[in-house]
Image 1 (cartoon, rainbow, N blue to C red):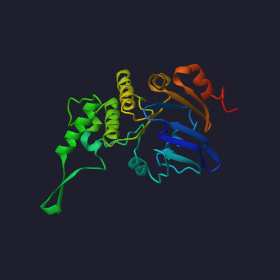
Image 2: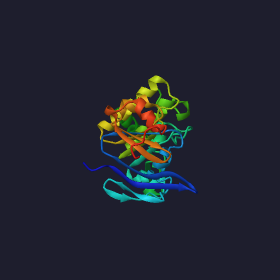
Image 3: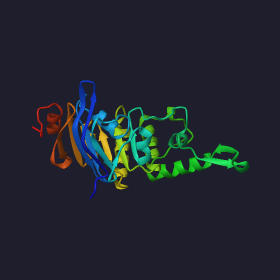
Length: 251
């Protein structure tokens, strides 16, 4: 099977600091890959190179079998890479459907195309359908995002990615600051993405979450990939040893 994403010898420097040091990574359809490491390990820099926030200094990225260069995050999104950061990039003063269609609003034309108005009926119905497929339900669909819980906001961000047919989902600490029930909801949504053959890169400090939903775990330490393990063949103690530098498969 061909990987959905293939990263080869990626390097990213900031002045004299090498934040990502010759990292390679493959992600296949329908799998979840945990990307873990201590603070300053290079995880966030790596995904920002993949998603177009940063430009790598060396190395190559292949997406869906073709060499990719994303000059901006919007280029990565158009190709099918959706990244959900901790801040979610949602507009708190807007409703659910407005956030799902934010930047890609559907409009109706009147008077021969001279007048354009938002097609709110279409956007509301489409938003409800995609939320239903993910088994996400809101008591008040018209609620503004700022009134929703953290887990509900995550659900809206995930639904947006699903609606726009994401081919790869990158999730940066999606369960951070959520209650136990909401954490489980987000993990369930990751499972549903996998069922739809949408691969997920999960960045998390919460190792129980990583072990609950991933197929493989990639560990970074000081900018390097120091280990890659099948989730079923390792444990939290071993992963922590790699995270702190006590173990290193590249030595």
